[in-house]
Amino acid sequence: MEIYLARHTSVDVPRGTAYGQTDVPLRDTFAEEAEQVKQQLDGRTFDAVYTSPLTRCVRLASYCGYPDAVPDSRLLELDFGEWEMKTWDEIQADPRSARWWDDWIDTPTPRGESFRQQYARLADFLQDIQRRGYRRVCLFAHGGILSAARIYTGEIPFGEAFRQVLPYGTVLRIEI
Image (cartoon, rainbow, N blue to C red; front, side, top):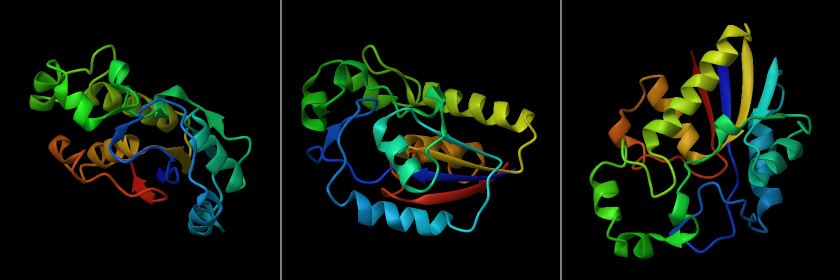
């Protein structure tokens, strides 16, 4: 199965903020960024189109011609829990962060989730759509989901997920 994953366009939050599953606004460059994503998808037909339920993904899916993309919460970004909308400096000042920094793959954020939990959500989603027999699918999602997809296909190891986050507006093609 061929899967196209489109990362949402840039968000209008202060740089260095962990916004995760918070429904944040997009920058006023949305139309230009979204047009670039749309051009990368033009001419392709999909058996199904899914989106994270967050506005930044739903809006991009609609712009690209998929207003009926099916929302699926398994495509959400990492849940930063109590650290949502905090800066990385604020997070680092939290004494609980030392444990998370040491093992962010398996240690959940306070009242949030670990990266492995996010990966498991995506793996469950991918296995689910494989069972449906689709040949080509498009997903509108987040940087963490694109990283998890690259791990799923063996392109990168878990330890590279945060180091190799793909830019806003990236369209990633994978095969599973």
